[in-house]
Length: 344
Image 1 (tube, helix red, strand yellow):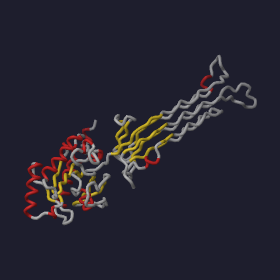
Image 2 (image 1 turned 30 degrees about the vertical axis):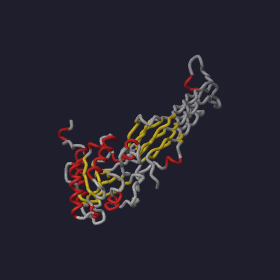
Image 3 (image 1 turned 45 degrees about the vertical axis):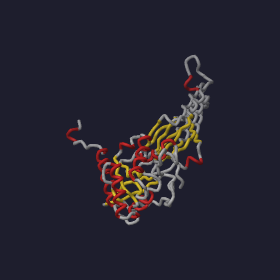
């Protein structure tokens, strides 16, 4: 399945059905009077979060969604049926914006959440509503009200517990493949990863979700390389694992480049808890290892973790460090249970 994290769609709710002009016609009843029913409401347009989706690819092939018109009213005071609703099924983490792509309409983060995007038009009144002492046989009825129409943007921000950041070829995809069942593309050239990926990691019988995004380079905030458009996918994470390749000539400088791009992007990324790791250490001899560790430690301000997805060195330590931060954040976000005695 291809990955798509942004889509523009046109939606229109259904028009209301027209009211009916009808008169009661029965044997032995001379003056039946008006009995025209009301029109039914038009269908609504909803956005709903469903399980099992992690892309907006469906909206590449269909961009127009129109709900059904309400049925017209009928004689014998029968109201028309409501028009069928349209439901836009989206993955958790989807934000919906107005046509300007800046004004936030809603942020859908949990499976089962629904939001009304366009309300269907009300049905028109039948002629029974216009009966009066001076007009006992009205021959008029209201048409239904038109539905609402609008163009909206769907923008997906993946929901993950931990995010991987770093320069291209820092070993992010290799780490994701080593600790989860995900199968990202891995190759020895920059920007192998073109789209974000998700995987579920397990350590000590505990699970958490890791998001991998394409690598950042200097100037990404200004559109250099792939740019920073995919950084939104790690905005919701609780911790960042910053991988710096041991093959960099100056790991400290590589670390500072990525930190600069995180700060330029904003969104609170530079304030998130960060775990720094020197990856691909299996490629270093002992002397070079100490030199690279010292360079990265000076830039980060603390000693980094040492990782090798090939030899599995440091993998368990990194996962335990991530799950510790994730569980602390989950505990802080959990609702506080109040004793029943104090609920009054």
